[in-house]
Each structure stands twice: as structure tokens, then as C-alpha cells.
Amino acid sequence: MSQECIFCKIVQGLIPAKKIYEDDVVLAFHDIRPQTPVHALVIPKRHLVCLDDLGEQDRMDAGHLLERVAHVARELGVAESGYRTLINTREHGGQEVDHLHVHILGGRRVGPMVCR
Ligand code: 5GP
Ligand code: ZN
Image (cartoon, rainbow, N blue to C red; front, top):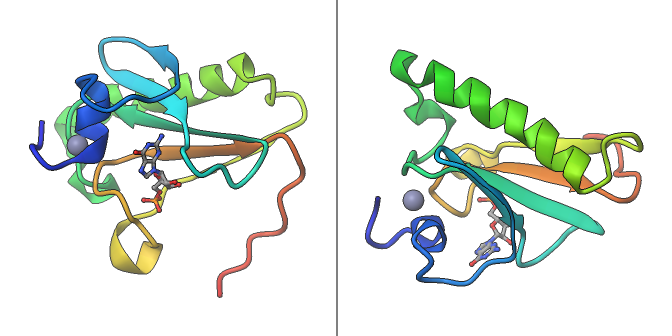
């Protein structure tokens, strides 16, 4: 846990969030500023800053996280129509919250991947 991390505070229940799914390893909740009709975030409960923080010892949890992303997308009803997953890493990746998270964006067709 990181004292200042907003997502760690959500994990601890110190900040409210609209939770979708939770187990021992991951937590999924709705994004506070949704970019699409369905916009969820899936995070490891343990404080990992970004994808670059993952090591060999995290392979099981990383696989679990990814499988649960697919599960949450099914729960949200976007699996059949489709969705985009996104992981931003550090400054050039546009990461704003320094706690690893996977975006699930769906509920409408999202445009082609354009990097500006
Ligand atoms: P990033 O740009 O780091 O990949 O994405 C961070 C995401 O976290 C943004 O989409 C932002 O709207 C969301 N976010 C930031 N603070 C909060 C919060 O307190 N609660 C929730 N539910 N989402 C947040
Ligand atoms: Zn954190």
C-alpha cells in the first residue's frame, strides 16, 4: 500500500468507488470520468506503480488480472459487442494515476487507435 495513492485508498475503502468485482488479488470499479458508456478500471490490490513494476514473481497475479479483465467485461455486458483495453505507462504513455490499472472501454464503437 502507498499512503498517497488514490487507488490504494479505494482498495482500503477510504475513498468511495462504484465497485464491480473484487477478489483477493484484484478490484474492478467504474471510472469516475467515463470516456465511453462503459468505462471500468481493473487494478491489482497490491500497489504496483505501472506495468514496468511487474517482475517474474508477479506472473501468476498478472495472468489472473488479465483473465479477470475479460470476466469483468462479460459482467458489464460488453464482451460480445467488444471493447478496448488500455494500459498507460508513465509520462509518455499518459499515465495519470501511479497504480497499475487496465481500462475497459466499451458500450459504443471506439475509434481507431490514433496516437497524437
Ligand atoms: P490513466 O490516465 O492513469 O491511465 O487513467 C487514470 C484513470 O483513473 C482516469 O480515467 C481517471 O478518470 C480515473 N480516476 C482518477 N481518479 C479516480 C477516482 O478517484 N475514482 C475513480 N473511480 N476513477 C478515478
Ligand atoms: Zn496504489
